[in-house]
Image (cartoon, rainbow, N blue to C red; front, side):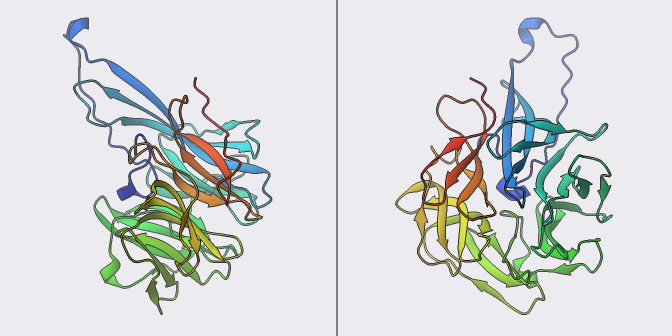
Length: 315
């Protein structure tokens, strides 16, 4: 997806910055540079009044970079109607991404430079949840606030884990055969005992105590980044329908009743990173549309109606 976080790196933008010296070159020899601003992966606050999301800044040098190279990423918060946007920025932090609210709405969970952090809603008191030698990505609180699910590993390989909210009692989700690059953040069911996650284009439901893992989708469709509705009855994800193409896909929690509610332009300009409003009526996601430049945050009703763009109005 153009500018959107790599599927292999958890829906968060984990860029490797390549610096090429241009000293001594004439102006004509220096590559043209295109700058990008993209908004990703919004999440509602528990009371539905606000949305937290990630803004990423990247650039690409014509004839040098095959993909945009990340420069920085910041956490932003806005009202649910798209008004009163503000940046939650910390000095010295280059990449802060993949934010979501705690169940009580008082804190924001996010990733800073490959480590999971927690901060108060106003940006103060940021601290690492768990110190680790491995990279961490896509953290999500359980609905009861007692645990955090996340991905942990190295560039090409890793696994999904859960831990207590204070970073203790690390436990792997699923058997070793599910060792995998991340295909999206695990999403919790309301009972806080199960999560759904994507692996090799299909969705799986796993008990966090390790007792069971069940594949719930099969066939020719492609599924990424699932999100469970607040009542646990539905799952929305992004992917590719066999007949309908790219977009957001809705299904029952057992993997049946699959339908598509949005349409992305193609594999590059797709919709992604969907999550639910607290009342289950709306879905927030990031995507590209028409006259707008760069990815923006959108909301849509769960039946696909009422699509609105909330951020990144660059044209």
